[in-house]
Image (tube, rainbow, N blue to C red):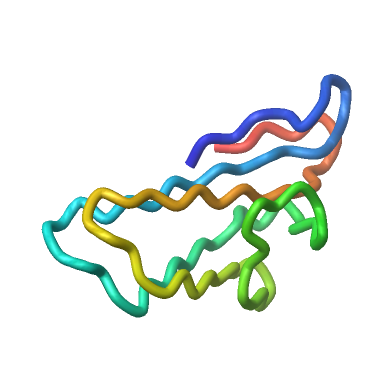
Length: 88
């Protein structure tokens, strides 16, 4: 996880997840599941480079298909957080 403000003085935050196949063979049927902190709200249609395949409450799921050895997929998600909120 890497999080950074989407813009100064805003309550939007961009999360970036980097998925890498570190194995020596093709990874098939790759599924990534991420649970957002309870204090944030997913912003659908935001600046997500790869929108989740499904959203169930705070749980975002991506069905990435196959990743070749060494291949990386970057997933970027926009969330809204309460003003003056610190995430841990």
